[in-house]
Image 1 (cartoon, rainbow, N blue to C red):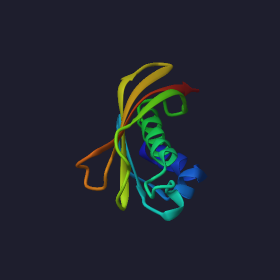
Image 2 (image 1 turned 60 degrees about the horizontal axis):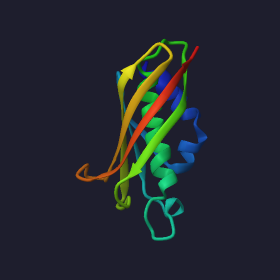
Image 3 (image 1 turned 135 degrees about the vertical axis):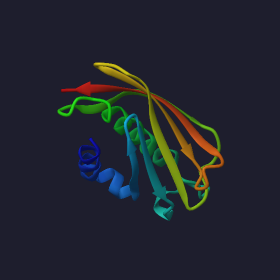
Image 4 (image 1 turned 30 degrees about the horizontal axis):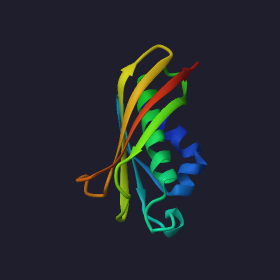
Length: 132
């Protein structure tokens, strides 16, 4: 399962563009970190909301995939993100967790943290679909 997720993550050129790193994989939980780069900032110097959303979407998707059959693929069906504070610092950390894994749909919760994992930057609720 871990190798399948690592291989899939490496194929996501967008994650490479963001400089995102797949840090840990557990059944039902995935962590992705993203180092700050000036190309990822918005007009006030914070991480762009699109970066925050993208890495937590991927963390939730891979968390869901970790509980799906070996031949499955995963796609986001819908998600909602609450941006709670500006994403500052040298790194942000996205952790996706499966709340309910179903045969077709999985519901996940994502949290984006500051680099010290002291402050929550964003929360996501997401639904992922299993494609076989």
